[in-house]
Image 1 (cartoon, rainbow, N blue to C red):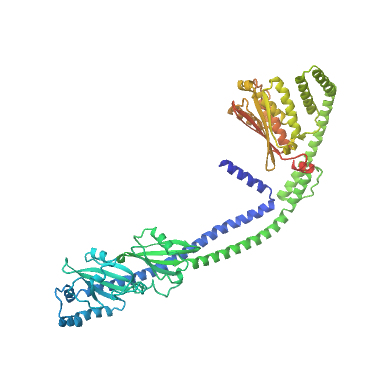
Image 2: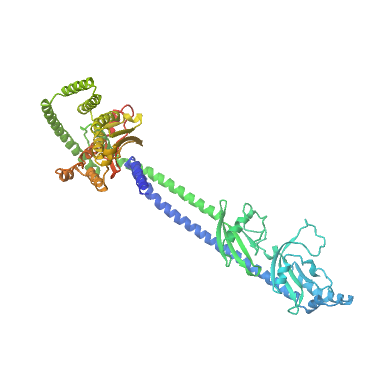
Length: 637
């Protein structure tokens, strides 16, 4: 995780480092303005949404309570009608009659008691039916109130009512067919009632019959089935079995999945009134629910939030558009103002580019005050100091070269050495000493490569050839115990490297890797692998020799990054133990790479004691037989 964050931070740094200061200032300006606008708009429109939601909730909560009050009123009307229906003792006596009544008695009952029952029903126009069912075989049916109990004995609600033992049972009878029609066709229209049902006992332990008082569902739930709606909300009823009753033909429910609504509602507790939100497609809805205890049902008010949400979104989009236009306008104005302010800074930048290309005689004609003027002054002083140091360095270099020439005059001529090696090689071949001949060939190639130092940069192919010659000579010493493996694509053989930058690493691998007994018995393998990552060439040198401990590795890392002064002060008089090394070779290679290519390049080391040592060299990707031109390489460096 840390590596990923580090890589992300490095990538962001690389991207931002390529952006001009003017662009950075514009971006910073936009961000400084944009973040408060985003936070303010989020807070503002979230407040609008919450307020709209609360207003909508209060309004529709009132409508829900109003409908609930109407329902309770209808419950009282039905309940009062039920009580009055069986309050007359003559009605009970007629239902319990133990003998068949004579015609005179039937006429008298019909003219008086039965007429009162009919008036009770007709005086309440919202009451659809008042019916008494009896199983007394002596009782005659008098339509439309008194019927035989056998007509309803097969209905689903009948056993529930009997089980209540005289207690009131409310039922929503869906698609109920009229009991007065003996031959009812399946396709005949039926009605849906909200019915009060109870078993009639008189006295308390004697079954008299069943009382049914019906009210049409659209009368009972008036607003739920009313065709006049506000278009933004609609009510529905969920009974104890989960059935939903509402005007499903209403346009409000077009495109709404009532089963989804029912599942959302079922997933919540129904003990008290509550509300929740759910979404169908891209339309949000607010659902308010309240229980109707007598019916064991719930009244729901479904409210569409599409209109208020759309209005808030339009206002938000208008606000964002205005903010974007304002930011764009201010950014353009800021850009031109900054161009005027940064004009002298651009002059200074162009002068620095000329210096980078090698023109150290740049004259900066700038007398501006402030930070830019001070920067220009110090830059002029820096150029003056650089020219002085260059003159001094040239003089020192000339003196050094002269000293080297004088020293070389006292040494053996290199051509004498080459000719001597050639003569020895010929003598070895004449004597059939081919191993010696090959070794002399390798040694001669190494001497030519080392002494012919016409330039600091060579191809990777040349450095690899030099290493192969070195390994051939070292294998004579170690009796062929050294193996060199190369994993370098042919295209990468033309990569630019510093001359004699890989050979010290191979020499370290041989010198320190062969220090343990296992390496002396089995030998070691040195692998060189090259790979490209982005614009970087990675050259990896790994040996399976002695390795080093974590303490020695940490000390080596410390030597690699120390400044010259502290390093020489600490290690100038240090005498390493046998096969220990002082790390100067690795440090010199890393410093040469950093000096030529930049601080981001160099070498890194990893090792495990008794297992391996790995040196990773990081270079810019520069192909000598193509790729960057000479000018581009100079500019790059």
